[in-house]
Image 1 (cartoon, one colour):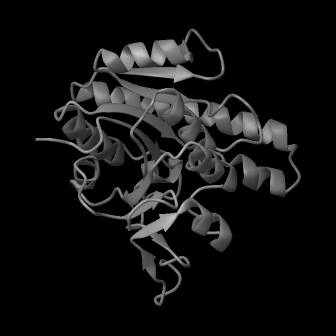
Image 2: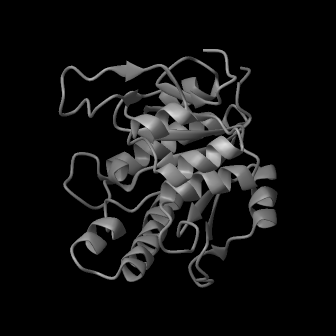
Length: 242
């Protein structure tokens, strides 16, 4: 089967790993995500993965109630390593070779990040999970996802969420929310849509990197996304044909 995207950077929120729980990591959700990702490797799609930490610790939320922002972000980056190691285990249990590369050095747990090492692993057919964000406070995992996507020359950034695209307001709270099939980077910034933070959108815009937002909870959606089926919301440059 032909695919539109040969190499993708998949961004998962930490909350996506909770399943129906209030916090933490759901074993059932890990297995589901691993199985979905395996279906992509069977299409010979090269996969980089960035996962958030909202299921364990949210740096921005903690900073808003008095914690030092840099300290809170550092804690959040460490929490992403926990999620990355959990995903690695789940992927390898379904037969998918996986490497975790961390922006914060912790050689007894995983490899340190380097662009050349990441590309080498991807070229050998391994899934690469990028942990610890960018390694710097004040940058979200959304920004890390776009940055790593650019560094590995991914064809697109695929953001897997719990809703089926980008809406003008939260569809989980507003029944009259309107979904967008296609948006430009400028529209996302102008409308202040909460799909990714402004730094991530600006970085994608400056480098004309396509972003696809879709519902990860629908089985087969990841496969449809890389095969070019119109699901979710596509975020593109001004000159893209809508």
